[in-house]
Length: 179
Image (cartoon, rainbow, N blue to C red; front, side, top):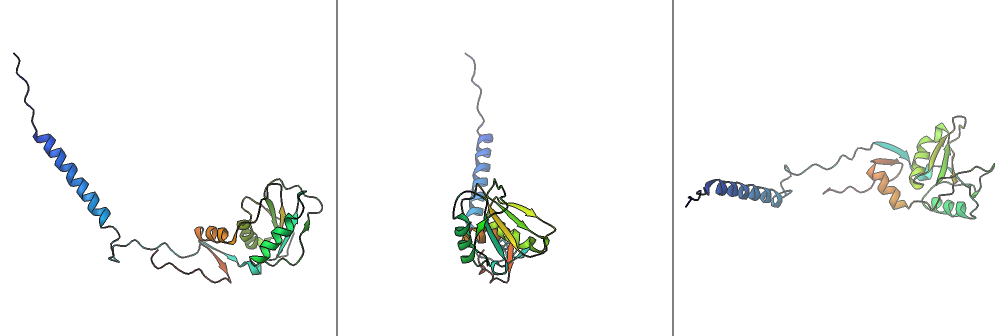
């Protein structure tokens, strides 16, 4: 009868001990993470703005309807005025008839580039159209076939905060001391 090879338990015991030690270290780090010593805490994200945009009350808008759907420009104008935009003229149809196949066209001159950028947050997916011959600060929004509504103020504020954009002339958001 052939003799059976003898098994050596030492390598298995050493491997098991190493795994137990590694597991204990990982759990110790998990349970003691962010525990209160301010030197070990991760720093808050920078509050320095990447860009500044004008506050809505300093943006002069004109809202036009480039679709056959009645009343959408008037409703959009009402929402924009409620959010603080300066929209002195009533909404009307885009004449001469411009075909806007997307959400909207935001038309502006070089003096209104930052204002138009702010307006784009209210119309996600809108096309920006710069016209260098226009010298006024007016921003024109022409609503298109894919327009479904103006973004809510809270959605715009969240998007601006994610991009670290500050509105000049607006009150700063309260800071979160705990991050």
